[in-house]
Structure formats: structure tokens, C-alpha cells
Length: 362
Image 1 (cartoon, rainbow, N blue to C red):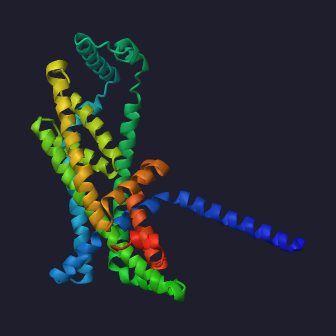
Image 2: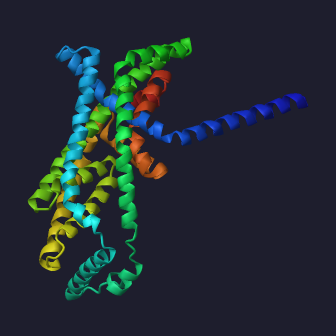
């Protein structure tokens, strides 16, 4: 091997590395577009069974079925927006005259009540609960900045929603065209297996996202029942927010419990801590924990396992391992990614015994 060959190899490696870095930089600059594409893809996977139903049962043509599916999406989104409007109007006056000092005083009073309750029951309240220590560490000046960030996000929501719906329309309408274009650029010897894999992935992920919606709907209804039983204001909105957190397996429900406890205490500010605030908060948290036991042991494993044709224990272990390796984001994408890997393994490694065992139901 002469110096010219070595030099060419070094140059080629540098060019490849530069190309990879350039692609990553482009992805970074266009991350908003990538998010639009991912959301559109998820809506497409959810919409495919709806279009199939409309075309098969109601005899809609492809374009009309696609438009009807998009109208359903718009109505659902509008319903969510209308759901939050009463809450925003109710809190609008308070936000317009937001007083940080008043909020700190309220939290300090709540902490005093908690300290008195603990001391009265023979429990030495930690120094962290003392008003002098709490207020010295408490800095709520971030709240106005946070509200401004929320307003900025809402202002860009319209453009993002229009972009997502536009992309989703063509994803749904021209699915066959995309398949034909994909086949034309694939290596001929592998094109059939790759397209078969894409079809199976499309089918299983569609089932998965529909199963996820069913699971979140069940959790939402159960949370709503718990909050209504104890007379919590804005129960519908709180239940919805806590249900959405269940997208994060196992960790999301814990965050939802803490959120529900905080909102319950805020809802009862001004009442007696020992006789009203504390018991109501405990009862709400117990109710949420019961819901989570039902969800974690029954609805979530069986809905997910049936939607992607995997054993409940298999799903649990995949989510657990992904959480240890990649954190919360790993837990969210664990099941879809694992499903994709199973399908690819079945198509390209059909003789492997481990692959055969894991993919026997696909």
C-alpha cells in the first residue's frame, strides 16, 4: 500500500465525516420541519385505518376519505382548544395582575400550616418547611417569563398545525405513489422484502398508536371520575393533562400524581390544612394510584401487546431497558422502535432462532 492510496483513504474519510457533520447541521437547522414530518407521519399511521373504514364500509373515494379524516383531526383539535378556553378565561384576570410577592406569601402560609400539622402530631418538621428558609430559596420571578414563552408557543401553533395538516393530507392521499417511488430507488434484489417490511411496520404502528389513544382515553376517564368525586375545579382539564403524561410509561403517571396533588392543594387554598386540604389531597392521590395500578397492570400491557403482537412481559422489559439506556425519550419510543426492529429481523433474518421466537406472532 503506497502513500497515494493512504492519502486517498484519508481524504475520503475526511469527506465522509464532513458530509455527516453537514447533514447533522442541516437537520439541526430544520428541526422544526422534521418535527412536522414526524407528527404528520404519526397522524398518517393513525388515519390509515380510518380511511380504510371509510372506503370499505361507507364507499368513500380516496380523496373524500382523506378530507374526512383531516376534518376529524381538526374537530378533535378544536375540541381540545375549546376545552382549555374556560380555564384560560377564568385565570386571565389573575395572570394580568400577577403578583409574585402574593404567590410567595400564599405558599409560605401553606407551608406554615403543614409545619403546625406535623408538629402537632409529634413529627419534627424539617427546616426546609420553615418560612424563613423557604422564602430565602424561593424565586418565582420565572413565572412571567414562562407565561411569555407559552404565549409565543401558542402564536406559532397555527402555522405548525397548518403545515402538519398539509403534509398529512398528501401522506394519506398519495400513499401508493410514495410506495412506487420508494420501490424505484431501492435495490431490485431487496425491494420486495423492504416493501413487505414497510407494510408490516405501517400496519403494526397504526395499531400501536390507536391502542395508545385508547389507553390514554381510559386513563383520562378514570382520572376525571376521581377528580369529580372530590369536587376539584377544572377537573376536565387536569384529567386531560395528567392523562397526556401517561405517554411516558411508568414515569409519566408518577409525575401526574404530583401534578394532581399540587393542583388539588392550590384548589383548596384558604381552607383548613388539617381538615380539608390534606385529606382531599391524600384521597386524590390514592385515587390516582389506583388508576395507575389498573393502567400499569391491565390496560397498558394488554392494549400495547395486542396492538404490536408482543407479550406484555416483553413490552415491560423493552420499556424498562430503554429507560435505563436512554432515559424518558427512550421509554417513549421503545415500543415503536422495537416493533420496527422485529419486523426487519423477521424479513432479513428469518432463520435465526431468537428472531423466530420473538416474531412468531407477526
